[in-house]
Image (cartoon, rainbow, N blue to C red; front, side, top):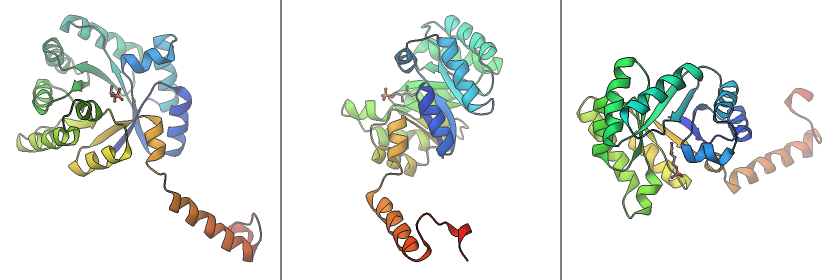
Length: 226
Ligand code: E4P
């Protein structure tokens, strides 16, 4: 499982990279616009934090294939490192994916609401496909089922593209997606923290420390005692 952080907030990225086994960062135009500062500075700052090898997924905003390809080439040159260009699964996006694949630019197909959109994007050359789990649930669909179907289709058709499940509102959705065999999830910083939260874990750790300190002394660790 690859854990990816769905944010452009630098403090949140620093924190997650410090604590958790992170493989990358995803952004979209909404996430970027929340930071309300220079687009290029945001991306360069993220690259500095995560390093050249970590995945960074950045979305093109053009709505024509020609524009998407231009943006992809520009971003690849300007940001560099392990970069994926997010392209929405509209017809012009599929056309752009075919061109970008030939140019060797890595693609994340995004704004996916159906398994057939994911399949066509993968056939067109996408490296990752990003189904929007919670947005599907919000329209009375079944986000987990769509992810299951994509995983199944990729197995059936011997497709190498990976699933990057996105748009989560709670840990249970992440858990159910993990059970489908999807290779990666992108979650916001709040959900990333919540993945580990459990009152009984905290209670157990407190109890261990209390019992230890009763015998070995307050603030002592294993190195300090015989
Ligand atoms: C990921 O790349 C998507 O853009 C993102 O997860 C969408 O999440 P949202 O539905 O919470 O906005």
